[in-house]
Image 1 (cartoon, rainbow, N blue to C red):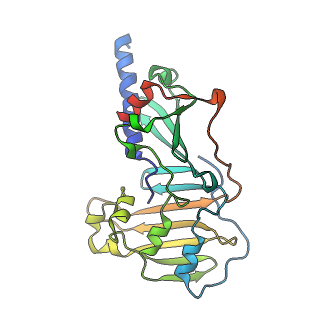
Image 2 (spheres, rainbow, N blue to C red; image 1 turned 45 degrees about the vertical axis):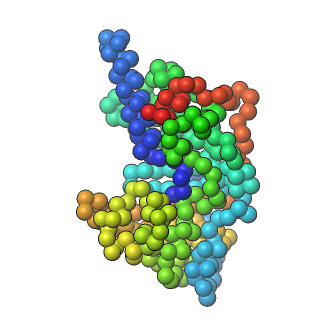
Image 3 (tube, rainbow, N blue to C red; image 1 turned 45 degrees about the horizontal axis):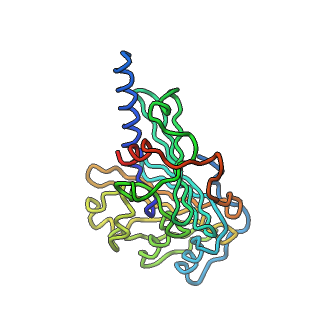
Length: 274
């Protein structure tokens, strides 16, 4: 339920690469977040046009910086959006069980520029084995084999909640800032591409009426959108959840400077290109 903000599958591939690097080295040697709770206070009054009211609550380019998180099955992301800077920060992590270590990766995008920072914990020395600096690394997109593996800033709605809401024929105002409706995941190609964790084809007709619940805070800002995707074929029922919070409280995004940053070395491109 996201824009092109990066591939969790890509991170899993990179974590697998880290495992492979570790295994090779051993053989050769002989051996996120802030509080996502919804704001409290008086709830918005019922609207005569619930769909329009809900769409108006979706963040846009006029909003201050805010935090977000998304959960799509096993894939979890969190980050910051700063519309004024055309900035996006996206964090994700993947845990390896054998051997046990965690690879965390954070991308920062400011307009066309992109940086990545990698942090490997639980296995001392592995990050050095992979020759990955711990500072921000400035990436050259032209050196990436698949640009879809890294984020871009598209707009202030990273989970594409507005696109989902627009597919609903009607939206019900349930009171207390809560709205409900049915999304059509087959509405267009862009919508289908946004749901990489959902087998839309397997859902069949059910994909045209997927229930969703949205919550708008007393400040008029969207705080959450939850899709209840039914089971289909081998796919279990799942909830797809997007949360937007800390409007005006999240840090503004700026380009890393000085000793915080360096140009990405060849090892970074080897990692990302797999």
